[in-house]
Amino acid sequence: MRLLDVTLATPEENLALDEVLLSAVEEEGAEEVVRVWQSPVPFVVLGVAQAVRAHVHDRACARDGVPVLRRCSAGGCVLQGPGCLNYTLVWRPEHHPEIRTLRGSYCHILGRLSDALAKRGVSARHKGISDLAVSGKKVSGSAQKRRRKAILHHGTLLYATDYDAMLRYLREPAERPQYRGNRTHRGFVRDLPLSPQELREVIWGAFDLHGEPEEVLTAQELRAVEGLVREKYGQAGWNRRK
Image 1: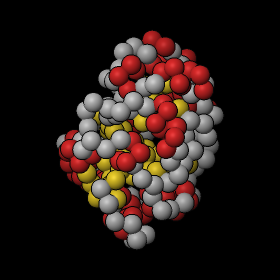
Image 2: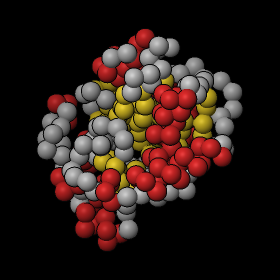
Image 3: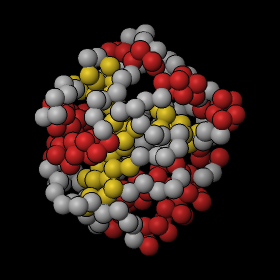
């Protein structure tokens, strides 16, 4: 399995890279991937089917120069940026029978992360469809895009949330997991008591990964990322289509 610790320069490129990695495994038979990354700048990212006006304080984002983008996977709208470590898995169900169904894949992946966090003294539980929570508060959310031969599962691990920015840029969602109740973003989310490096080690341990991660992409991958940004992730027709 390929290990990547790669953050590209822009939010658009980072979203595009996840889809490039998925396409390589699905269409080209590339090896499976685990990636970690963290955006150096804040941005809002919508799930593939979400409407901007329902989830984003658009004027505040425009005023502050915070991009509003759309990822290729489902799930909810979140604020990305410093204080949020991301992980990406691109796996083949034929190699991991536990991920053949949507529910089974979330249970398996989040269960392994929960076990790895427990070894660090953090008691995190799988809550809702795709969250990890500590003491009933969300510390990690995740989403998937499933293709015939491979799935993309990507998620967040929060360790230094900017709560003011979250309230400034994100609307309170109408649809909520049952365990959230009527709590606001500030009341619902909390940080993990671990550093970014410790969280990287949690990810490596959760999925039994060894060796040094790669920090450089191939020229072919960079070209593919550039193409997807130009054709999709950098286009209002994609990001603001709803």
